Figure 1 (cartoon, one colour):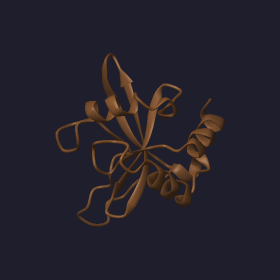
Figure 2 (cartoon, one colour):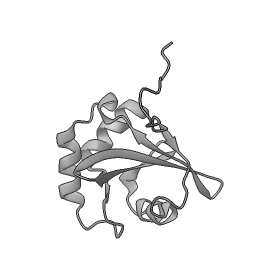
Figure 3 (cartoon, rainbow, N blue to C red):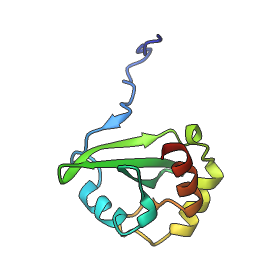
Length: 117
């Protein structure tokens, strides 16, 4: 089993992120995701986040009426390419009122459902 070693003064980023005030309101993002039926896969809502020309597949798992956790998903592990993310962003432009957040495309939804359901 490998362990993460600190080689410089930068700490490794956590894989799971508990929602806090440092990011946009997850409740607002979840509310927008609930309007897109293809965003709900299994018990999680999936979406794409862009930041500094970088696109990430993310998921929110709600629980108990609130956001339980937010995760940045390894899209390549699920067979989703950078081109798939780029296409979804171009199709979803203007869909969410929160800048930098986009719904998953039907193509990404299909790939995720094959792997996760």
